[in-house]
Image (cartoon, rainbow, N blue to C red; front, side, top):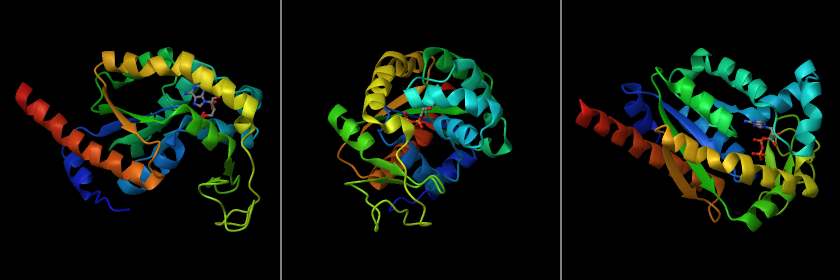
Length: 245
Ligand code: ADP
């Protein structure tokens, strides 16, 4: 990666930490980009989909309850996801900034998060990863994951060396239950009806919203672009503060 992240680290060290929300349709690259951004920034990557899948894999009571909901492409209940997130945001590793991926995803979740930010020292930024509809379909139906290490591959755009086998650990790749074609369509509808209005809700609460057109870009370039934007934002937030003072 080409970006020197030291600039963000310097700027945010002495100012309000950034709370970055990765927003976008299923398949827009939030997970892949989030992992890269964590490497670049050192901030924890808090992905509600991963947290829920972890509960399912461990067969906890919550996981057993969630299995069918996730497999059908519907959303988990707001109160449950909210509790999971509020708890996680209280961990000390979030104090210097964090990345939220897949949250908030409904208006009640957005309202809850806006309330959570009140009186807390964070500068919230929503990064909208914009990808064209047909490209989303292509990405989701060709996605394969390693259940052991979480690596994400794609049949065309990032294939493994040996078909069906993870390059990292030799694990057998699987298709996420919700990447089946009929479920993908349900997820995209859910996104349109319940998640799309979240950006506007947060904007009304004063959250900075930045869109990135990433259909043509590879994940590394998207992550670099975000870091570059955040670097500028950290600076401009500081300037706004100075003006107001
Ligand atoms: P994608 O963004 O590609 O749909 P995720 O891993 O973010 O994938 O989410 C997978 C599934 O987990 C969602 O379809 C939904 O069922 C559940 N989920 C994740 N985040 C939330 C959330 N904030 N609220 C409700 N359900 C969620």
